[in-house]
Amino acid sequence: MSRPALPLLVLLASCRAPADPVPETTAVVTPDHDAPPELGPDPLVEEEPAPMPPPTHVLSIREPVPLEGQTTLEIESVVIESIEASPADPEAHPAGSGIEVSVLLRRGTYEQRTSLTQLSPGYRSRPVGWLEDYRISLLDVADPHRAPRISVVIERVGEARTDAPPVRLRVDKGQPQPLPDGTLLTLLGHGHKRTMTGQSSPLLVALEWSSPGEEPEAQDLSLGPGDDVMRWTWRDLEIEVSAYDYDAWMDLSISRRVLERIQAPTAP
Image (cartoon, rainbow, N blue to C red):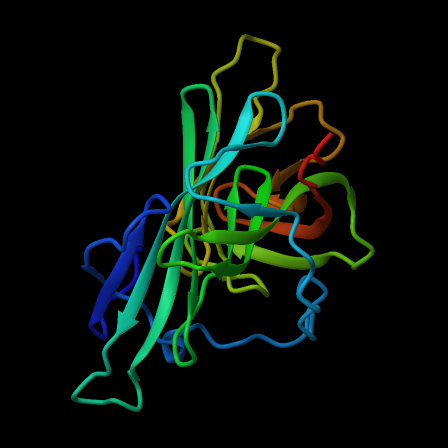
């Protein structure tokens, strides 16, 4: 995990197969008092937490499940964490526990990973992660010490938009712009391609997305020419340019796309 080293953790188990208990290691977590301040109500974020949905899949370690085509998803490992209270400030850094689940998406030789966590009160969990256009939500881990059974919801980004109205904002070059879910969007700059005489150059856009608990993710775009609308997607966000000043700022309209649940195949 990429989290600041605050309290001391002792990992009690790192499960890689349903066998005997496994050896101890160490790691760190982030207390929730370091989380970014909550923003006001916004169409992109639900004000009330939705009821926990039923899982689409119950997974075991190292048992790939098919998604689409040659794409599979599997659980690589389950790590059980024991968090020791900070002697200097036990109220700010209390004793606790947690579980970290490593998830792998594979397509041929291509691989992408994310980690999901469930931590005790006082620490910031990360139960939701993205792998390409798939969102994975961790619901529960049963029997984590010997034979973990991981309940998840797997969803894919659809083509349609949700009914929520779009959010409109301006992103200035080099200034991280917070989105309602805590993600920071930074415009790194604009550029043009060299073209032949009489041809128009597309607008090149360099962006950086930074979500809480994740490494920053770069996105390079080529928009136009000839496009009626400058539009692209990132995860379940659909972003449209309404105006821009070259290499200075962009006015954006951001909508969400629907998420479609991927159900596990039924036994014949």
